[in-house]
Length: 542
Image 1 (cartoon, rainbow, N blue to C red):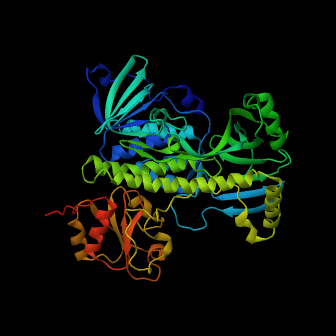
Image 2 (cartoon, rainbow, N blue to C red):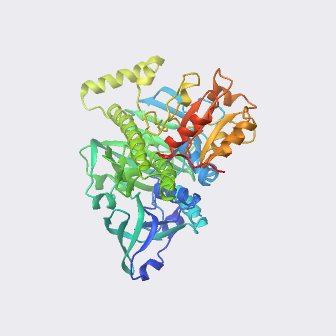
Image 3 (cartoon, rainbow, N blue to C red):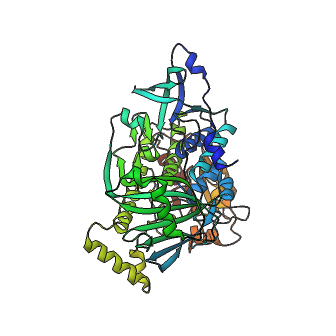
């Protein structure tokens, strides 16, 4: 299927649904507003946990243009758990190498995955429309649990103590439905956010960037290239990425005072691209857009029974690939907590930890993105002189390279101060995998750690689990034992350090909730209570 055909045809066409013919609103456990990468990811995650959900969108197909193109290793690990990881990897362009250029000089290059023995690469490049297509197909495979409703536009929301009432507009008129919970994934111009009269706090940067998807058969290497002050865009910056199907993504800085509509016209875009690529390269312009840097977020992501995720909750500049990746991590954090609440296995207050942890992640992303933007687009002549001096030094002096900021690329947040962590009782295990941290992948002899962990609470241990540990773990509701053989020594290096034993309580989203150097059932019990937001005793099996 060609990319043009994907865009042109409805992937989830409008169909009249049973709720439209009811005299009173039907109640659903979860309604997800927005069928982009974040909303579709949430729907699949909930479906795999046995939660029925309805996804509504005013569109009926994928978005056009590459938009989000860099999908990070953590997002691919999430997609692995949801059944899409291998497909994305096969279609995407794999890369680990980034290069920074000043004028036309190579200043330095860096490897984004210097540690070996991970299943997934640091990043793949793949157009957002392919990601959405694969996620829609996965939703359709799970149609027993997921209902995709295209051309269903939210008109109004009203929130009550135990549900949310939504009014939706369709080609057949309006209807209402109810939801126990609503997840708002409807993007930067969120209707849900507007309905709640919520706004962003943060910064808008005075600069504009041209994005162009260009189809060409070029022999450029598969890597991220970032130019400061290149001869084809003097005083500005540029970025080049390869994507599947001979599509290349080009970002060109334009400055602040421009006519956006005029700058998007082919007669203005094509000469810019020819100056960059050279007259000998034949190319076809596929898609053009202009964006302005925004680094901002909502003050809270949870508003009663309405939960915000992705661009509806926070926005950052695209340098660093923090948009779609952080949105996928939002719902990875949220869905297991919502499952426990819906099953009445945890109080609603557990969802406050979603607010706490993902606001921390948003602040981290905003900070990195703001620093990148300040370096890429200096706001004064003194700032520009400093930046150029750093770039010149970095060509020959390694100490200056960490100061170069062409977009700190997306990394998963470590929830180090989360209220549902259990603090270490000693410091004898490696610092890189402390409570709050995401799992570090490693080979296990029969596969990979990250593909075998997550989806539920697990007690992870290495080689040393005896019969007593198996017996005790089986007594605890919602906890399973995950014993890994360490044939390569990588697990011990990453998780045990100099210790002979190590026990890790892993959350369903593959973050570490607690860890110990000795097996202690009482401490594991307490940590599980804390991680699942429970104040009452965990239920033990007879």
